[in-house]
Image 1 (tube, rainbow, N blue to C red):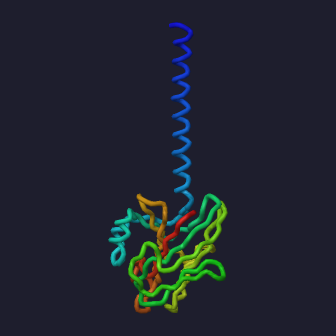
Image 2 (cartoon, one colour):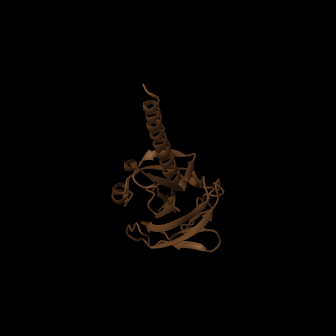
Image 3 (cartoon, rainbow, N blue to C red):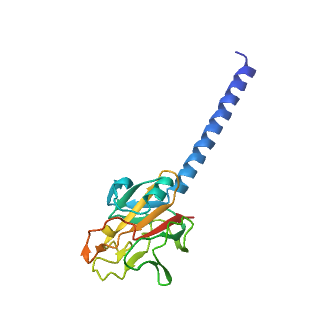
Length: 195
């Protein structure tokens, strides 16, 4: 093999190696952009096993297939999170809150992926998200407080196989004054989008 042929073969291999490396970097960059949310602890169940959730059809149509309960939500990179109130079916008035001035209150609204209301918060890598769900149900089992980790059994975190957004599903824990009898996690639903 001549020196010229050998150099051409090495050059082709070098270009191929560079192309493969660039592709791998691009793949990991896109995966990490979708991996900003971190769900810690809890137990995961198939969304189809949650009886009585009035919005399962819409959620499954968006690729949502699992829900983790009793878990805490954080982020692994700096950015912002936009919360969208997307649906509710409840006998009580429930609210989603973050910080001292960001509140959304449900009104038994039908499913709206674009949201009936929204707000955004800035977040830093490693931060446990500061949000609560509250209810006028009179139960000591509320509010759900993600930052402190209290009453997380009333929080379901739904994940999709098709999109990076999450759905935070609230179970207001009380049906006709009896705790834990409802468990359909559709009393207020909030979409979380990392930007």
